[in-house]
Image (cartoon, rainbow, N blue to C red; front, side, top):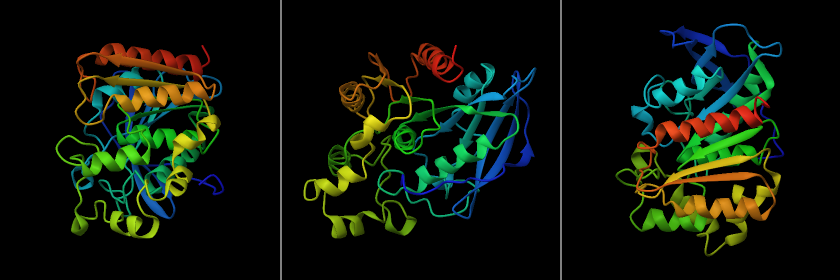
Length: 297
């Protein structure tokens, strides 16, 4: 992925939405590999900084693609960043909502990561954005995408991951076969007719499992390249998360520390996959982190 280029495009405003507290809201679109990708875009009102507003690219977790709506879910999360004078750009990955393309998944396929890399390039071209002040937030599957992006491009100054699927492929595959992929799991269920995980049998036939072919899976794992992270990372996880084991964040924290990269870890006793009971605290720490490493305060 690091040998490819991700040019993005000009951002088109498709629809003006009801404004937020101190920011305007739009449905926007941009181009990714010839596909039109839709996104939620919020832009602060008021006196724009000389070099433009800082930006947070917002990577949502697994939502059944057919149920995804640009303006639904994560409303309070987007609002919190918007209120703190960030542009928020939340892509609807390909195959989600009105976005074109096939919803091929975010775990082995690079498709969603490519959409986010093109979102970064696109927002850097947006007149109100500061192209040098880009942060990235991700939840669950979106946390894994955040990690991939940050070892692929140097344009993201800091990343915050909540309850991220940031484990090795060995751990992800074991969870998939040992009861993951259903209920609240961020791993979608196997449904060949619906397109979910339809790549998995071919992947296993071609490359074997992570146990059979560790070199291949290491080569496509962002965890292998943590020394190349583009900036500091902050991790959040609840101990009662039944969707993504809290051990994933503990392990990633240790891995990032081992390569000498800046990292913070916040663990919330008894909290769930969305960190609902500690939302305000986790969001305040997320904003602080972005203020430090994106705004440079």
